[in-house]
Image (cartoon, rainbow, N blue to C red):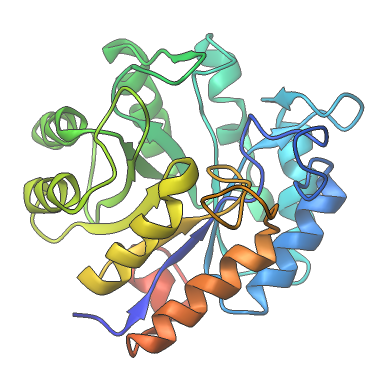
Length: 279
């Protein structure tokens, strides 16, 4: 088991609003401030969703992503940055892939790639085979690595199909996200089956939806993986939902658990090397 771990920070997502929690960052300035704060604590990777600065609603516009990435890299130039290509709110390839067109110092290291369609509580995320393959090809053409998001075993099998077709190249980085109502549930058996089914040599982190975030983060740390953590997936600190969480709260708790298990965040250079990125 590697003692150092990847902490994939998810500060915003597409769902939390200032009305549901005042602690979620939505403007580029707020997102940059919170990312830079936790980067000082040891976070080595960030999964970004952009919001329209005027409305706070999700946006695919590369100009907004550019403002966020520029702000992060002015302080933490080597932090691993992933941008979303989510199909929850945007359905056209040109929209979903726009942030992948950023270049030079604004080029993201990763783009998210959800490996099948799925239902959330109130919304579907539609990911057709044609869309997945088109996004994977564009990432490969642009030299951007895919952040492989899987919610059940079938999505891992689809990743293996893409590998056989030559559309994914190692090292493979997977986010295993458990606890969604229509997908793999947040328990040790489901997690173990998913880990066991990953391609040989895959690098993986684990997140949990809502109340399951803490349990899944803890299981990942014990099992030797990385964690996905942040207000995107969970806005509460406790399962009784009496204390709203901040992103800093969630990161501090993960660091405490890791320390108790003799683990620590991987350094930025180590993280980039492990994920197949140039230093």
